[in-house]
Length: 339
Image 1 (cartoon, helix red, strand yellow):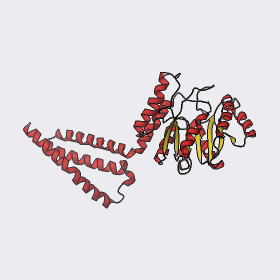
Image 2 (tube, one colour):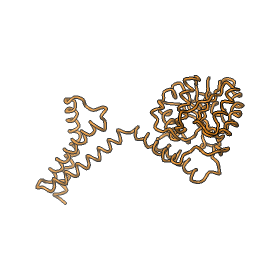
Image 3 (cartoon, helix red, strand yellow):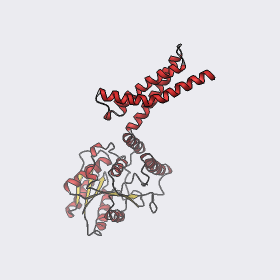
Image 4 (tube, helix red, strand yellow):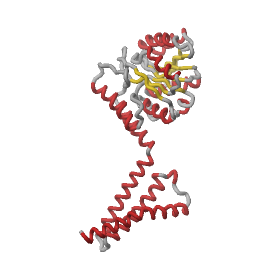
């Protein structure tokens, strides 16, 4: 099986010098797999690309892929994934940072579970045995666990996953990664992690988390951007909305109907028309409003194309909806008369 380790870099010359030899040592432990190391570099001015090319001259399984322009970590991974699948015939893809925060010796944990039949194995910081640096500030710990994991878990409704933003994982290509249209993923930065995980989940991937201790950067500056938390918030809410778009529209239409009903009822009551009749009329107008909005907006993909079908369904809708309106009208008349 061909496994490609995809590593995005930008100004990681010193780190990549240390990482590639360490990975090479770990790869030797897997005689039943073929490994390639693909470094996707954003034209680093510190010479990261030259370092990788030096290794590539010595080892045939090391490759350098230069981005045309630096567009974010998500974009770098997608670029690398496409290359790995098309040029290196990848059966599995491993995502890994170059900064040595992911320990090369943890590679076996991912591959071991992948060999057991899992399609998406996550190196998790938030399962038993996993952890994050004690040196992190309380603010970053809060964002990582509460914002990056608990929030995603409850909003997306995926309760069997604990670490939604881990950057160390292995993915099966056939039937999963090869089914994902990367150009449709909104985030090209760190938010891609959540959206990619969600898409793998929706494709039915068999997912497993293994514990990892996330380390401090060996050197250099973190690639995490200051607006990462807001981006993840936006991505999660966007996913939830897109998955339940019709339901949210249905709610909006319902409240619109309530507003139309209440407003017209209040206006008619200012005339000589009685409350009971006002309730009949306002309910009827609100009913036409909600039926039309649901047909042409909330569920427009299922709207009634023919006038005959629309009329028949409106009659059914009218009958079923007017029963509570009639009851309400009599209740109003009774209340006004007696109280």
